[in-house]
Amino acid sequence: MNATHRLVRLVRRPDGLPTPDDFILVQAPIPRLEAGQVLVRNTHFLVFPGLRTLIGGETRDVPLPPLRPGDTLFGPAIGEVVDGTLGKGQLVLHLQGWREYATPAAAECRLLAGTLPDPVAHLAQGSAAYGALTRLAEVREGDTVFVTGAAGAVGTMAGQIARLLGAGRVVGSTGSPDKARRLERDLGYDATVLRGAAPLGRQLAEAAPGGIDVVLDTVGGEQLTAAVHAANRGARFALVGALDGQLSPDRAGGSAPTVLDTFRLLNRGITIAGYSGVDHPDVEAEWEARLGDWLRAGDIHFPYTPVRGMERAPGALPALIAGRSFGASIVEL
Image 1 (cartoon, one colour):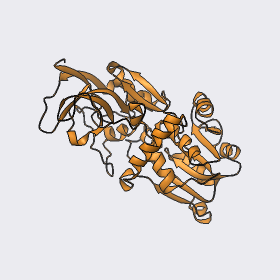
Image 2: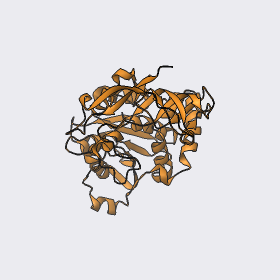
Image 3: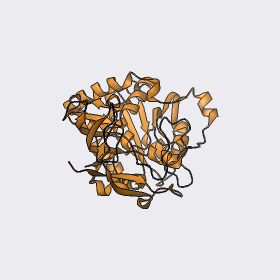
Image 4: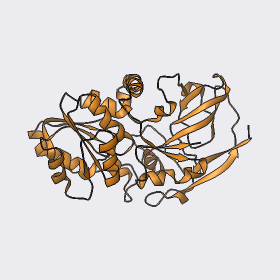
């Protein structure tokens, strides 16, 4: 084993959206194990838009620390134990991504014991979508479901989950005609609305002529505004993301103001709630069991864009923010 490894650090806090120059790939000694830690050789780690918020420093109400210049990035990762109190060769999930070798505490690692047919699927961001669609905005048989940001890590899973839970029609939003085709061809979306192609309200009326019963919102902004206008009486909205704010060059990732028509919310009896996994600790195990069954049956797919090689990792977050991925973005080492 080499005595050094590569990791990605934040160079400076970006002025606007981050660019590859805001990150640097450095060589550093592999940390020595301290009591209770394990040494893990990472094989995959997730690139997630929430890093934009951590880099921007607006972390109030966020259960993760801010990232400051000089800090190593972090996030969900899968790796193989090479030393420490856990069995050598075991695959684990932990939060020390963005480096080739990690030293998480053994108590902070989750052993991956074959629940899913492909270990990489443990990085799928479907848990929040599943929880939101079963706990907050429960999908009923025949419902029309609208998923904003449908081509993202959450959205690509959410549409499939909604269908498996009984949705009669699934509509998504994206900003790319190519992604719209893939959503409809590969992931079972019935229709998509394209940001910037025409007024969203008009597109939604055409894509969901019977109105919308459930909204799984990962974006906010004008898409959430339009969804309220298209909602049926008794519609249920679950908010699981705020990409409109996180991906805005004019914000630091910690706010996403949206205009909502409270008159329609009131008179149509629409409910809106934000989903947090902390409030639903039972969801993760339930989701993982169902995901495993669905994957083995071929009923669901985990779409992701691979970023191959540590040398490409510094550009992975800017590429994600620029919309150059479909599904999750995962660095493969």
